[in-house]
Image (cartoon, rainbow, N blue to C red; front, top):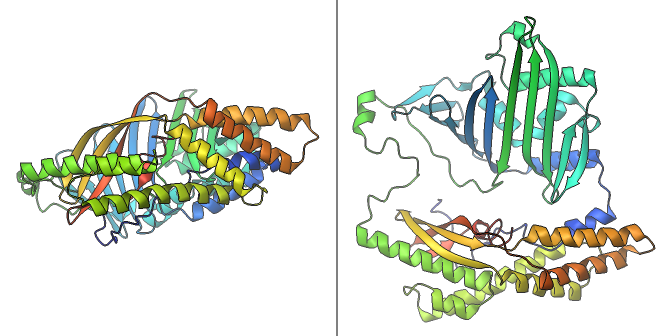
Length: 459
């Protein structure tokens, strides 16, 4: 975590996607074409600062998995590779280091395979652009349908496109070294590609590829890859590596395999226990003020190290700011639709009424350093997807009946959504979410409330 961050009571809450049904309304007012979706996705990826990518690959029965943390602003990356041998890599400008299973760190040539780091970072920042560069106007090669909160693209090119685009995908996947030249001249017999693009953010969330080849000797080869894109703009720090001076030095170094980015060696047992207790209490208090809009709940749950005045001030700030952010995001989402202030107020009240039906429990806390505690929360969250699906189905029926103005459709959309929040909200099974609590001068701060809000209390 960056100590240079300014810690104040007014911590910025990163819940930009927590908002009302602007995208649902837009769906009925604007029928986005595949070309529009691709263009918006290309634009959205230009603003990506960081991302986590899970890259799973299978070829001829051999499987490998790589977790990538990409910081595009700093031009740094970590690759955690699981396969025949587990490896951990650090990539930066003109630097590539790899840490082997025994802890030994080696500096490699600054090119990563046949692909320089700069080109690699560019490709992973905007993978849709890679597909466009390979296939041209790929909207002609894919069919698209809406599935819940995603645009789902499926490859539907003809036989010629299948063969040519399949070859391009093989080369892009870096198989020029794994398959010899003759095999790359084999015939692509099948190509399955799917893409999922988030409707709200226009960011790519998932790619699945499966390519089958028939070789000149009539043998067959299959190649599959699955990429999942997570935590856009949330990557917080890349672990750097330095080359080992000798294998013996690494064997003698008890911290050589530490990938946590922090150490609790400087903490005595009592201090560690106290930090974990108070960090858990702070997260408990924060949830009371934000999710449950309960200032008294914050005051009652907050750690004793906070004065009564600090508790009351923080409770008011967190409660009001969280609600204001929801309202602000909803207003931005619905800009231009004609929605009224009263309708947004009704929707806000209904949302918070529904989310207070959720349940949670602080189940663990681990002080990873003197500056950070990871608090684990078990959450029975609101099934927001179910509410939106029910609302979408009802609005769809009304829209198909025709003879209704856009203004009336917007109002009806809000009315149905409010009713579903109040009367049809369901709660999902428990999930565990980790919340990173910063410790500064004995004070506790959560910089990313998304860690317990999105996919936690709101699912």
